[in-house]
Amino acid sequence: MNYLVTGTDTGVGKTFVTTGLIRSARMLGIDCVGMKPICTGDNRDVLEIAAACNGAEPEYLLNPIWYRTPVAPYTAALIENRFIDLSAIRSAFETLSRRHSPILVEGVGGIAVPIQADYDFRDLAKDLNLEVIVVAANRLGVLNHTRLTVEAIHSASLNCSLVLLNSAVAETDISQSTNLSVLENLLEVPIIGIERDQNEFEDIIKKLDWKVPETARDR
Image 1 (cartoon, rainbow, N blue to C red):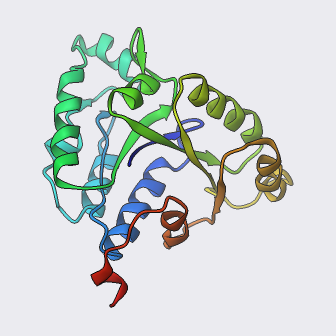
Image 2: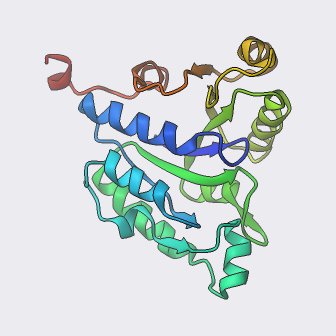
């Protein structure tokens, strides 16, 4: 199974999670790679994903569409007067999926960020047959943002495999110590907390049931 890594908002740690999962998986012998099909603004996220993949694939496959304007893809396409070529995304994904498994497809912002006027990341997940991993920042407001995101995923008949509650910033309010347990009560989706600057993601890989090659287990 391949996955869309989406967020409850921008700046919640999607790239941190995506690259961490890729590195941990590859260390276990799992041929995982990532892609960011649409990049807006600077391309640091793409470079980090490429580095996590150990140069397994060229950058043009990991990121087939790049807009320099740091806004939503639909807005960037209007500003730069350059149509988003969905076929280029599908082609790049199909090439990667023939060579590797699993594929982590990092989105832009949240699940409903528009790619075209009538097409967003829920539609992309359907087109590419992706399950969804949600990254949420552990801070005040995350209960609302996460519930709305998971509802939007389910209403689109997509499967939300996992919610990752990312402690992206140092603790600043009481909500950060209660958000995980409250979300576990509110959602019927597996939830795992991620510590700030965490570099081990094997527990998440186990939860996703990715198969570790026998040769890797014997090391």
